[in-house]
Image (cartoon, rainbow, N blue to C red; front, side, top):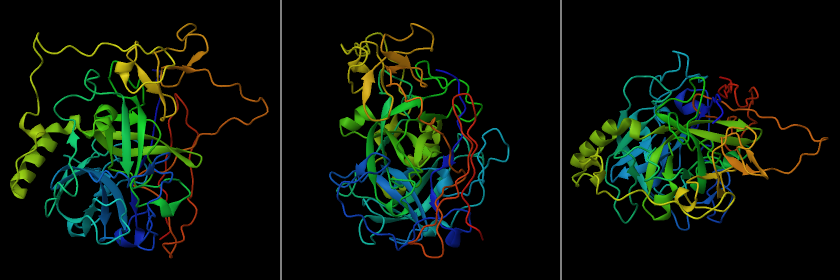
Length: 439
C-alpha cells in the first residue's frame, strides 16, 4: 500500500452548557425518527426493521435528554464497550505525535450516564439502563488508547438485546477466520448538514477495512505516526455521534453472530461528507476487556461469557482444519468476502459494493487491462475519463478532540459548522481543529 498520513476527529457530540467543553449537540428538542427507511450512517438505513439492539446509544443527561451522545456495543448483559473520549475530555487538536494529545478530566459524573437499546434516543421509556461504573484504558494517552467499558446498574435481558463478542481470542489480522469488511451501526449524523439526524440508530454494511498497521495483506504503510499499531482504518460510513460504535466483522454479522473488531475513535471530512474512520482494536486490549467482563459477570450474577474463559486459544495442531480454499471469483467479480475470490482479496473502492481484486503497487502491469491501482493498493475498474473543464475535487477534514456540531442558544436550530482544514491526500497529513462554540 502506498504510504500515507491520516489525521482525524473524535466522533462524539457534546453539549457546552452541560459539560463545559467546546463542542455541542442536539438537545432534548430533537425530533424522534419516524422509523421509515432513510439514509444514515452515511449511506445506511434506519436500524429498526429488523433492529440490532446490541448496538446501543450512550447518553449523558438522562433518557431523551442527552447532552452528550455517543454509541457503543453490549458485550455482556451489564457491560458496554465504547470510546474513552465519550467519558473523558480530549484536546482541541489531535496530533498523535504530540505529547499533549492526552485525555483530560471526565466529561461528566458517572451518575449522569445512561445507555439505551432502543433505535432512537429521543424517547424516555424504552431500553434505558443507568451506568454504575466506568472502566478506562491505562494511562492518559489518547491515540491508540481510546477505549472504555461502561458497567450497568442492572442486566439487559436476552429478550431485550443479545450481546456482541469482542475479538480477544484471536487477532483481527487472522484472515483465515475474519473477512476484511465490516458493518457500522451507530447513533450519529446521517449528514454533516443534518444535525437533527443524530440520536437515531443507523446501519451500513460491507464497509472496507482500508488498512491495519503491520498486517501483511492490509498494511497502512507510513502514516506519520497518526495510526498506531492498536488501531485500524476503515472506509467511509461513520460520522459525528458514531464515536464508540463497533466495527462488526461482516462474515459473522451475516450469520447473525456479531463480532466487534474495535471502537470508533476519529475520522475526517471531505466537503460535506464524513470520510474514513480510525478504530481502536479490541485485540489490543484483550486483558482489560476479559478481566472487566469477568468482574461484571460476578456483579451481575450470571455466567461469564464463553470468550472470557479461553482468551488465548492454543495454536492449532497439524490435524486442525485448514484455511478455506480460494473461491472461483475473478478480478472484477462481485464478492462477499475473501473466500469468494481466486486471489483471496475481496475489497471495496467505495465502501458499498465489494469485488474480487489483487494487490498492486502502481507500476505498469501491476493491474490487468481496464483496471487501475487505487490508493488502497488494490486494483479497481478504471474510472471514466474526467471532463478537462471540470474543477479538481477538493479534500478537507473536520475537527478533532471530541466532536462536533455546534448549536446556538436554541438547541433545535443548529448554526453552521465552522469548517477549517487543510487538503490532505496520500503522503500529506490531515490538519484538524475542533469546532468550538464561543463561550
